[in-house]
Image 1 (cartoon, rainbow, N blue to C red):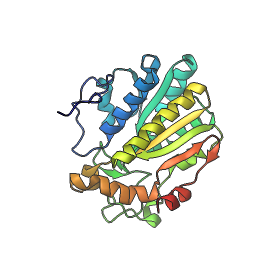
Image 2 (image 1 turned 180 degrees about the vertical axis):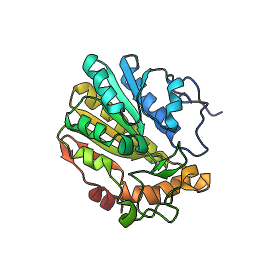
Image 3 (image 1 turned 90 degrees about the horizontal axis):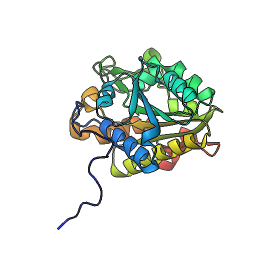
Image 4 (image 1 turned 135 degrees about the vertical axis):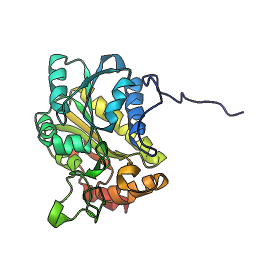
Length: 260
């Protein structure tokens, strides 16, 4: 008879019920985040700051202290929490619309100051909560609700590779970009999240883990095609891997060559 080797549900997750669309990758990231807090034994001294997006609904299911921030302002709120409670492990949970559109200056200045907080970015290239329109991370050619013919560089501009930008700042101690499109991607991303928190606990500086997640509804594709689409379209531009570790910055071009 098969045996259960690990719990199906993290202890810090109050319920597995959620309101995400079928095929959404965000619940996977939330589980990995909670697993990391449990594994490191820091759940009771952790405070999360959550932005505005589909993922905001998880605030009622996480068994950790959570603060709700205005759209895009989570890094600044996290800075305040950390400075007032320096022994606390502080993270933000944000989407690409929240972090890279509404709050770009917030996260850049937080990183530049070397604030000892960890930002978790859920990047699916669309504003999922408000219908699936383009964000600053949408890749060229990607179809969204307001780029029906695909994102055009001349008209819409180029995508922002936020992980690379933040990795290049001196205040950033650790930066990585993971994915949840397959089991290997999930395993790597879980390690990245743990390393980001370990960096924070050592007092190294700012840390970020950007995670590519699926949004089949916002991408206008069948649910089952989500993981492949994410890897082929998003992953081809926002290449996954560690972007900064031990002071060394790895450019996305290097990660693309490794993948190829």
